[in-house]
Image 1 (cartoon, helix red, strand yellow):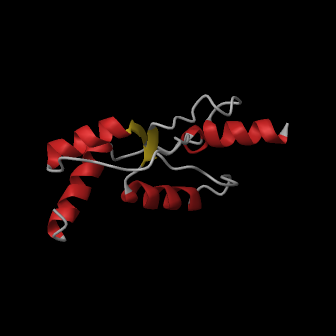
Image 2 (image 1 turned 120 degrees about the vertical axis):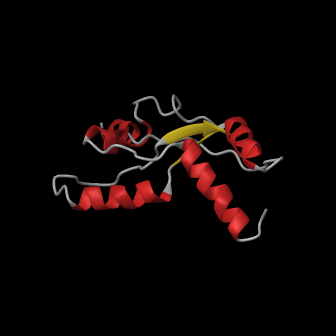
Length: 115
């Protein structure tokens, strides 16, 4: 039973392969990570580990979003997607979406001379 409950906790389902998508990755804005930490500190009933991911995006979707912002080509490693089900189940709500995250990332790259 412990093994199945761990699968549900981390992947949102008892089937260990249902949400493990090698062509998708989980993302979250750093501000939401900080907000989640503060949120959990304020909720003493929250126990254990939490996954903090507001969106799941394919590498193709990521490349499309970034190419609209200035980058013409994206290359990267494939990663499994994770579930924020446990965090969402206790009431946390994400504030920042994908477009906001990538706008900030591209702005930061420009400010630092990377693009």
